[in-house]
Amino acid sequence: MRHLLALVLSTLWATATLAQDYPLTVSHAFGETVIEAKPVRIASVGWANHEVPLALGIVPVGFARANWGDDDGDGLLPWVSARLEELGAEVPPLFDEGDGIDFEAVAATNPDVILAAYSGITRADYDTLSRIAPVIAYPHAAWTTTWREMIRQNAAGLGMADQGAALVADLEAQIATAVDKHPDLKGKRGMFVTHLDLRDLSTIGFYAAADQRVQFLEDLGMATPKAVQEASEVGKYSGRVSAERVDMFDDVDVVVTYGDQARLDELLKNPLIARFPAVARNSVVLLANDPMGTAANPTPLSIPYVLDDYLTQLASAATRTTP
Image (cartoon, helix red, strand yellow):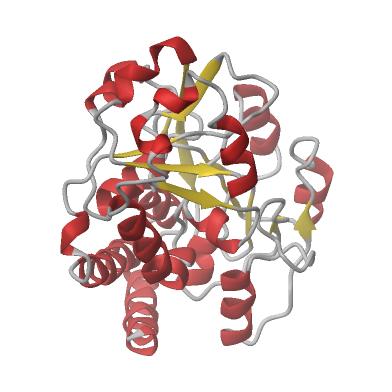
């Protein structure tokens, strides 16, 4: 399947390269970006934007170092390493974004375009990057781009809109096939709690309806609880509510969050948290700082890598009725 897709995408790319009219224009939250000619040197900033050109057979000249889920410390997530190996490519320069965008490192790669469709860049960041090369920013708001929009937006900036659409369709087909194996999960209501923090038990943080972690749960057949929808602010990827209002989440079937069982056990000693039905019955998927935890925030290359394992964990949590 993957090799067939690669062949199809390669053919589409060759055709599109000949047929694409330039300049082309890509609209985004900061206005419009004009691409004067077919970009060859591709750089990216922010989370996983480099996976789009990699999935389409292009090795970027530089991209952000992985700072979450990198289990071997090489700055690459395993599905990125695997794809570079498939393409027979060396690891390009990795930008350290621990303290923000490294503009000098980006400029040093001399890119033709900078992909940032899924990111949190500010207007100032965008203006600075635009002095280096044309920038493909997010379509709506920071960190609210879905994996589909990430692919389509970045692919458009590469002059590969048709290939991006084909990639989306292929991933959707893979998801549908995997979801069919877990019919009992369909319609279960899933909530993604941002973290389990023992230092602050006064509030509950959650990813909002616009966040792609939440939307990925919907891709997997689940539903977003009404309380999460109502508590989500437009244009915001996360929110917080007082722990005293935990009863509002009584329709949640499964909670997904970052942490471990020991931390969850400590939280359950808090009388407010103990009133959270899904948590009390341990209908929880606990994600660690590892590839699985990273891939719950879906990206073009991570979806096939962890899809079956993630669905299995969600389905298991959905069937629990006791702690």
